[in-house]
Length: 128
Image 1 (cartoon, rainbow, N blue to C red):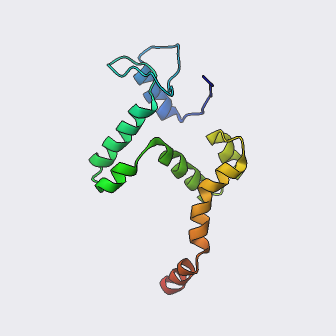
Image 2 (cartoon, one colour):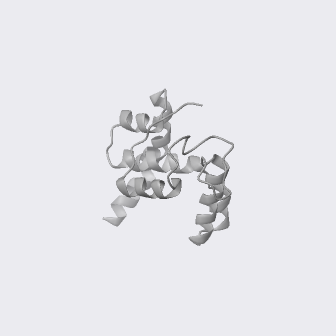
Protein backbone atom coordinates (compact mmCIF):
# COMPACT_ATOMS: atom_id res chain seq x y z
CA UNK A 1 0.00 0.00 0.00
CA UNK A 2 2.99 2.34 0.12
CA UNK A 3 3.11 4.95 -2.61
CA UNK A 4 6.22 6.21 -4.33
CA UNK A 5 6.74 8.92 -6.89
CA UNK A 6 9.46 8.18 -9.45
CA UNK A 7 11.06 10.53 -11.95
CA UNK A 8 10.78 9.30 -15.54
CA UNK A 9 12.49 10.35 -18.73
CA UNK A 10 10.05 12.16 -21.04
CA UNK A 11 10.19 9.28 -23.54
CA UNK A 12 9.32 6.79 -20.78
CA UNK A 13 6.56 9.08 -19.50
CA UNK A 14 5.06 9.11 -22.98
CA UNK A 15 5.03 5.30 -23.12
CA UNK A 16 3.36 5.19 -19.68
CA UNK A 17 0.72 7.64 -20.92
CA UNK A 18 0.09 5.44 -23.95
CA UNK A 19 -0.24 2.37 -21.69
CA UNK A 20 -2.63 4.14 -19.32
CA UNK A 21 -4.82 5.22 -22.23
CA UNK A 22 -6.42 8.05 -20.26
CA UNK A 23 -6.64 6.30 -16.87
CA UNK A 24 -5.85 8.83 -14.13
CA UNK A 25 -6.59 6.90 -10.94
CA UNK A 26 -4.95 3.98 -9.19
CA UNK A 27 -1.34 2.83 -9.19
CA UNK A 28 0.76 2.09 -12.25
CA UNK A 29 2.58 -0.76 -10.47
CA UNK A 30 1.14 -2.92 -7.69
CA UNK A 31 2.61 -5.83 -5.75
CA UNK A 32 -0.31 -8.06 -6.69
CA UNK A 33 -3.77 -8.16 -8.18
CA UNK A 34 -2.98 -6.63 -11.54
CA UNK A 35 -5.42 -6.77 -14.39
CA UNK A 36 -3.61 -7.67 -17.63
CA UNK A 37 -6.59 -8.55 -19.83
CA UNK A 38 -6.36 -5.55 -22.12
CA UNK A 39 -7.25 -3.07 -19.40
CA UNK A 40 -4.66 -0.54 -18.31
CA UNK A 41 -4.69 -1.69 -14.70
CA UNK A 42 -1.71 -1.87 -12.37
CA UNK A 43 1.27 -3.93 -13.48
CA UNK A 44 2.28 -6.58 -10.93
CA UNK A 45 5.52 -8.46 -10.19
CA UNK A 46 4.53 -11.73 -11.88
CA UNK A 47 3.72 -9.83 -15.07
CA UNK A 48 7.05 -7.96 -15.01
CA UNK A 49 8.93 -11.22 -14.41
CA UNK A 50 7.09 -12.86 -17.31
CA UNK A 51 7.82 -9.85 -19.54
CA UNK A 52 11.54 -9.82 -18.67
CA UNK A 53 11.85 -13.53 -19.35
CA UNK A 54 10.10 -13.12 -22.69
CA UNK A 55 12.49 -10.30 -23.64
CA UNK A 56 15.50 -12.44 -22.66
CA UNK A 57 14.26 -15.22 -24.95
CA UNK A 58 13.57 -12.74 -27.79
CA UNK A 59 17.10 -11.35 -27.34
CA UNK A 60 18.46 -14.86 -27.90
CA UNK A 61 20.17 -15.16 -24.52
CA UNK A 62 20.86 -18.63 -23.08
CA UNK A 63 18.06 -20.45 -21.19
CA UNK A 64 19.99 -20.23 -17.89
CA UNK A 65 19.81 -16.43 -18.12
CA UNK A 66 16.08 -16.65 -18.69
CA UNK A 67 15.65 -18.84 -15.62
CA UNK A 68 17.47 -16.34 -13.39
CA UNK A 69 15.78 -13.23 -14.78
CA UNK A 70 13.43 -11.42 -12.41
CA UNK A 71 12.61 -7.77 -11.66
CA UNK A 72 15.14 -7.56 -8.83
CA UNK A 73 17.96 -8.18 -11.31
CA UNK A 74 17.03 -4.86 -12.92
CA UNK A 75 17.44 -3.09 -9.55
CA UNK A 76 20.90 -4.60 -9.12
CA UNK A 77 21.84 -3.59 -12.66
CA UNK A 78 20.63 -0.02 -12.15
CA UNK A 79 22.54 0.31 -8.87
CA UNK A 80 25.72 -1.15 -10.37
CA UNK A 81 25.61 1.07 -13.46
CA UNK A 82 24.91 4.21 -11.44
CA UNK A 83 27.72 3.40 -8.99
CA UNK A 84 30.07 2.71 -11.89
CA UNK A 85 29.19 6.14 -13.30
CA UNK A 86 30.07 7.82 -9.99
CA UNK A 87 26.55 8.59 -8.72
CA UNK A 88 26.78 9.03 -4.92
CA UNK A 89 25.60 5.98 -2.99
CA UNK A 90 23.06 8.12 -1.08
CA UNK A 91 21.37 9.07 -4.37
CA UNK A 92 21.24 5.42 -5.45
CA UNK A 93 19.81 4.54 -2.04
CA UNK A 94 17.12 7.18 -2.50
CA UNK A 95 16.23 5.88 -5.96
CA UNK A 96 15.94 2.29 -4.74
CA UNK A 97 14.05 3.25 -1.59
CA UNK A 98 16.41 1.48 0.80
CA UNK A 99 16.07 2.52 4.44
CA UNK A 100 19.63 1.39 5.20
CA UNK A 101 22.51 2.40 2.92
CA UNK A 102 24.26 -0.91 3.67
CA UNK A 103 21.62 -2.62 1.51
CA UNK A 104 22.45 -0.30 -1.38
CA UNK A 105 26.18 -0.80 -0.89
CA UNK A 106 25.71 -4.57 -1.17
CA UNK A 107 24.38 -4.06 -4.70
CA UNK A 108 27.62 -2.40 -5.81
CA UNK A 109 29.92 -4.49 -3.61
CA UNK A 110 30.18 -7.39 -6.05
CA UNK A 111 31.57 -5.16 -8.79
CA UNK A 112 34.07 -3.58 -6.40
CA UNK A 113 35.23 -7.01 -5.23
CA UNK A 114 35.93 -8.00 -8.83
CA UNK A 115 37.76 -4.76 -9.58
CA UNK A 116 39.96 -5.24 -6.49
CA UNK A 117 40.81 -8.83 -7.46
CA UNK A 118 44.48 -9.54 -8.31
CA UNK A 119 43.18 -11.47 -11.33
CA UNK A 120 41.60 -8.28 -12.70
CA UNK A 121 44.78 -6.32 -11.96
CA UNK A 122 46.79 -8.92 -13.89
CA UNK A 123 44.33 -8.71 -16.77
CA UNK A 124 44.72 -4.91 -16.90
CA UNK A 125 48.52 -5.26 -16.91
CA UNK A 126 48.50 -7.83 -19.69
CA UNK A 127 45.97 -5.90 -21.77
CA UNK A 128 47.64 -2.58 -21.60
